[in-house]
Image (cartoon, rainbow, N blue to C red; front, side, top):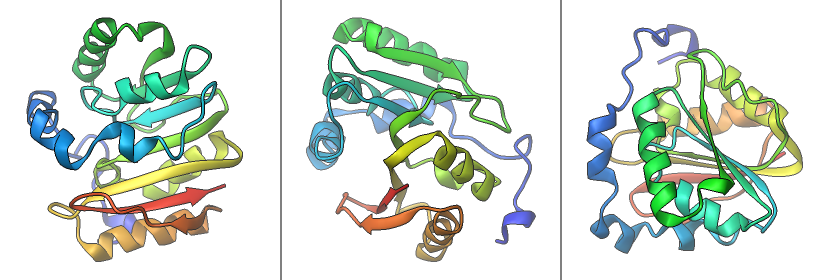
Length: 190
């Protein structure tokens, strides 16, 4: 599907909040351990943006990795997702490191510079990938990185490749393709 042919945000189907319970379970941690996936890319003290974090599967681990002096901005369109992250952050005692941000349908609405951005299994839900990736590129500090991950079970290789090409057009350089279970992935650098 061409970028301009994609549905508007109002027509776009988002992953419903109640379905995310199925994504966060002990079995997934065996094959997609958040700490193992993210630790090579995150440093203490960093500001990290977790876009479309669902119920916080990666958010809580990111908060632990950035440490007491770091911050994780969890940006989602759905308030139910943010509410779930808040409850989980309280249980994990990392609530002071997480900023919950409800994004607008056509903009992340983040103004703060970031060191790293995680887009895990969500880019296929974004109607205007060029605008979205351009916004992330602008937020990243020089040398900042974006880990883009899409599910093989839901996104075609050609659609994933289009996303990577769009990211290059907005200014990113692909530096690696980390191996992540049942996923296409690209580590991109500003």
